[in-house]
Structure formats: structure tokens, C-alpha cells
Length: 618
Ligand SMILES: Nc1ncnc2c1ncn2[C@@H]1O[C@H](COP(=O)(O)OP(=O)(O)OP(=O)(O)O)[C@@H](O)[C@H]1O
Image (cartoon, rainbow, N blue to C red; front, side, top):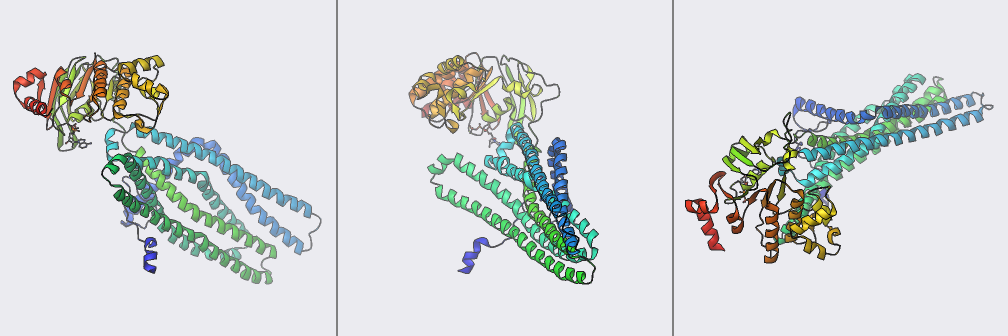
């Protein structure tokens, strides 16, 4: 029974999976010898240095904060000293006349100390917020500069966790812990100096407890450092899982996987509970250990101080000052230990943020890359080969050309490379060899943005943002007037369904087009592409069945969209294929055949087989 109750809380040494490219922060319980430890230390120092680069942008303000820290620490040392001196003077019989002055002075010291502490906090929060603001901006910008392959490998939720949880960790540490650490270190030094000046012997005796404190703290932080880092990673993991299962909600329901999903979530949740429990519980020891050792130091001061006072080596005032200072030096030590953990988890967060910032962004446009300008739409592939992973060629030696305004249908069995071909044209990926040109210009020599601005995509699953229908269509051309938006919607055959919706063009769509049908989503995507008015169009024809009326509307809308533009259609409908100026038949990454419908039928090759097979099915 007891074992069963204990089980969820049993401490298991965490598995050390260090994040890619990062490294554990310093306190070193991980295996790996000296070299690894040195590397880790270097890693966390490098992380701190990078955070410092952000902080350093507000050097002036930071200087003011440091001044306030100095002032408040100095005043905190002065208070007890004044009390000790007053006691000695009183006991020595010289008190009396200047008590009012003394009390006023003491009050001034404490009030001023509080004001300085408050200012230091407010200013530091300002600096921290600005730092986190800049880091968040940089991270978000970087996320939008990263290439598509990066996203293929990552879970969206896990990335979002870096943007939220990890940034929050950095933020809260900068807000308070960082400056508290500094102020604690300062207080500690100041206290020791004054204590030594007052009585070196009593100082030494008081400090007998320090090695014990150090050992206790080190024991604790060695464990919690790893656990905090693990908790952070577990949080990222669970966020990824939540995002994935919520996005795939239909799939989960369709395959009745709810129970399994809940169970798997439970396992992840359990890991967070486990690391969170141990990290918090072990770090919760710190104040207890410190308190006990603090009491021990009081006892030493009282006992040894009493003996020294009887022997005439110190005054009672000095003992009072020591008692106060003992409290003051254990508090910063306590703070140091507590803040150290927060700092560790912030460093872990910052490391995860910088890890993304260090990812290679989309290969930069070549030096001197040109603007494509307004394209006519002549597209040519010559000898293009491509692989996602080294050694596994996805496209081999593809060559074809399309004149402006032509419709090119791309067909072929699943996995033949149709989508990959389109991805190369839009430079989501770069070919291993060969050349792709638009209007005779090698697309690797033009600015990506100028290339993509000449293209529009209508994919099977067109994405709609949360916002009004009008805003969603306008995404194709942000400066379009309301009239232009409506004209595009009319051409796309979307107008009639939009005006029938409550709110019409101002109806707010929930996330990804919730609240409208699949066919309606496609009509909106077509309207968006019409408004963008691109020279080159990429269409991925829907394979899902849509009712005949909507289907006819979509076909009409698409025909209008394709007029006068070079269109690449991953085609599934016979009508589209037959009407195309050229058909590219892909098989196993090769261009098996190309030509018009009639030409290819005459060849009696792969296309003819596919066509007849398809025609029989329909
Ligand atoms: N991101 C990726 N990383 C590695 N391999 C990939 C990736 N995307 C696709 N592939 C592989 O490349 C090959 C071609 O895929 P592609 O998506 O281009 O085929 P497709 O003809 O569009 O297929 P479908 O008709 O099923 O959409 C497939 O074998 C696929 O497994």
C-alpha cells in the first residue's frame, strides 16, 4: 500500500537527453567526464553572454539600476551598524541628547533603502521587459525565416512552447532574480568586509557554518538544475502533443483513438508531475537547510560573542551588529540558492530559444540577387534532380518548359514526385542539380520574395486565418479595396454564398475556416488567388468529393483564375487533364512522358494506361 502510494513520487534519476546543439547548464551530475563538463560550462556561459548582449542595449539604465543596488545594499549595512553603535554609546553612558537625531537618521536610512530598492526593481523590470520583447521579436522573425524542411521535422506545439514557456522563464528571471542575485552577492561581500573590520575572530566563528551551507546548496542545486531543465523539455513535449492532437481532432475521433490519446497524454503529464515534484521538493529544502544553519550561526555568535564580551574583546553593540549581519548574510545566501534554481531554469529556457535562433534560415538570396519584376510566366526546368535526404533521389533529370499562359497538368502515381516538383518551383526546396527558370531568369538568382509574389497557390487544404471573410480574401493583396475583394469573390463564384451568410463579407471565420464548408473554403482560396493576380499559379486539385453544384462552381472559378496565367495543376479530374496544354506524367521521380492529351494517347504508353484505367473507373 505504502509502496503504491509512494510510486508516483519515487525519485528516478532523469534520463539525460541533452537538447540538440544545446547543452546542460553547469552543475554537472551528467556523465561524460571533464571535457563534457567544460563544454557545458562553456555553453551556459555562451548563453548568458548572448542574453547580456540584449541587456547591454540599455547600458545607461542598467548603470542606474546597479547604482541603486549599491545604494540599497550600503544602506542595509548601515542600519544595523548604527543600532550597534547606539547600544554601545547607551551602555557606555553617553546616550541621551542625540536620540531624536539618531532615530531620524535611522528612519531615513531605512526609508531611503526602500526607495532605492523600489527604483531598482521598477527600472530592472523595464529593462527585462524590453529584453524579452526583443528576444521574442527575434525569435518570431527567425521562425518566419526558417525553411520549410525545418518545420517538417518539428512539432508546432513544441516550437510554440519555446515562444511562450521558455520566454516566460527568461522574463521572470530577468525581472527579479538576476538583479537579486547581484544584490545578494554584493550584500554578502559588504557584510563580510564590515564584520571583519569589527571583529575578525567573531567573523571567523560566524563563518564556520558557511562551508556547511555551500555543501548543502551544491547538493541540492546539482539535482534541481537537471530536473528544472527536464521539466522545461517535458513542457515543450506536452505542448507539442496537445497541439498535434487538437489539430488532428477529426482523425482522433474518426479512428476512435480518444482513449489512447488520453493515455499518452497522461504519460507525458506524469513526466511533468514527476520532474516538477522533484525539482520543487528538492529546491524547497533550501530555505529549511539555510534556516537551521542560520540558527546555528546565531547560537555561535551568542555563545562565542558572550565569552568574548566578558573577556572585553568585543562590545555588546558589536554582538548585536553581528546577529543582524548574520541574518543579512544568510539571507543573500538563501536568495542566491533560490535564485540560482530560477536562473538555471531561465538559462535552460534561453538555450532553447537560442537553439532556434541558431538554426540556418532559408538560404539567403544570392549576393546581388535581382527582382523578378512582373513575370510573363514562361517556366522551364532543365535537368533538375532533387533529393530530400542524401542518397534518395526524389526527382531525376526533369526537363520541360511552359509558355506564358499555358496550363500544365502534372499527373502520376502517389509518391511520384508531383508535389516535390511544385515545391522546387516555389523554392521551398532547392534542386541538387539542374536549372529552373522563369522568363529566362534562373530562379536561384532572383530574390525569393519577388519570385513568390508572382505566384499563387490553391491547395487542397487551403488555410484560412481567424478573421472576417473579407480579410481572408484580402490576404492575396493587402491594399485591395472592398470593391476589388468583391469583384474577385464574384469571379471565384464565392460571392453568392458569402452574401447569404449572416454578416456577409464581415462574417468572422473561426480558426482555419471553421463554420464554412470545405467547398466554400476552396472558393475563398480561389478568390484570394484571383485578387493576388499572379503570373504563375499552382493548383492542387481536390480529391475529396464535393457536391456537384459546388464542384461546378469551383471548376468555373478555377477556369477564370487560370485564364492568361501559367498554371501548374496537380490534376485529378479528367476534364482538367484533357484541357491542359501539356501533361507531365511522372513516375518514380522521372518524367515518363509529356505532351497533350491526344499526343500521349497516341503514344499508348503510361498515360494511355492511366487514362483508360481512370476512364473505366468513372
Ligand atoms: N519532407 C520529405 N522528406 C523526405 N521525403 C519526402 C518528403 N516529402 C515527400 N517525400 C518523399 O518524396 C517522394 C515524392 O513525394 P511527393 O509528395 O512529391 O509525391 P506526390 O507525387 O505529390 O504524391 P501524392 O500524389 O501522394 O501527393 C515520396 O516518396 C515521399 O515519400
